[in-house]
Image (cartoon, rainbow, N blue to C red; front, top):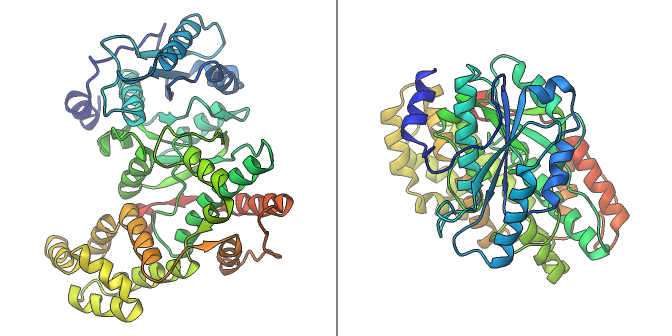
Length: 434
């Protein structure tokens, strides 16, 4: 077994807390992990969609479902999970299935645990399977219980991870656009918001310009151990997991694999699809907002200042930031940039190492914090869809006229345009940049 993976399994997991119920794991070189919290019977539709694969792909893949709830779950949620467990234990489909019961008394998630812990439980067990089979470069992939996939999903994943030197992956995604007109417009907006931010970061040349969708990400067993596995966050676990993968290797898109996350409104987590859909349904005119395109201009110029001034002092770079945008300089001062820059220069000799150290510090999370700081200090969000069309025009993808609220056909056209253009972005991460 690879020493790094052995160390991770020995020190960073709690494999005795939950066990894996499955018939056999021999020959498995791809594991898909699905956390399921009160998702019966829709979970079965997800499994059926994954089953649409070749016999060869099915034979080499295992799907682990982590049925989970916290100790304080309401009776209806616990009963739903009980029904899911019964159905999964009697599963007779072609898909090779594994089950983790994190809903039984004494094995429930703790009060502050959530989807991150559920993902980690399944992924840790999955890593041990890859290691036992000598397939450390095999794939560990995340999916959600309310997300279906297009036919050939497993075949595409097998083909991707079969190539040498893979590290991490994102999959193409498309939310089902359905429901009444208000619900349709809500999901059209939300997916455009996700893609707008990704395209803005790409235009700004950030190494963190990738989609952070929990049901559309994966990595090799080696990469998983290298980033110390999945975090235990109750929300945003996908964002932080992919951020760590981007700092350590190249994230690539899986050709031919499409996931379709549910677009239902939900209050389960403080942000994400369900919450943003609810906000839009409550008040479309105030909820339909995008970061000001000028914020990406500030970001791009700041990254250029840092990358071109690797041998300059932190104070000099702060002066350049102040000339660019006073709110940027204020943000960097609050982040203790000057002292941090001095420390990084002492610890990392050579411009290549220094550049990587800077982008490790000024990562995806700090980038997002900057966007919020700029929004709150002079670069207010744009309402409506003009910001989307402006960013697209900067990238040579002009589309007019700008859709208006209520013009669903025009909004669908804009989203399809963004989807097609987004598929052209193939690789992300610091390793690609440096």
